[in-house]
Image (cartoon, rainbow, N blue to C red; front, side, top):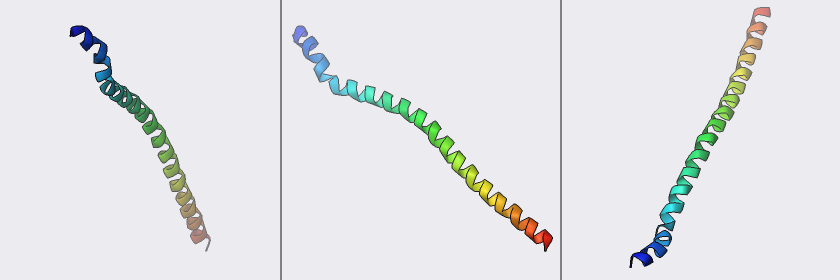
Length: 66
């Protein structure tokens, strides 16, 4: 019976093996993607803030001239 357990043992645990491998791959990908998403979000936020800062500077100059 031990011989049969050895033959079918890998098949029985196949789902668990794939689940663990998939989790590890997904976790590693998520860590890398999180970094990229953070950079993109930071860039977009900085660009938006820079636009509003430029608008404020222009209006301050207009106010001082008039």
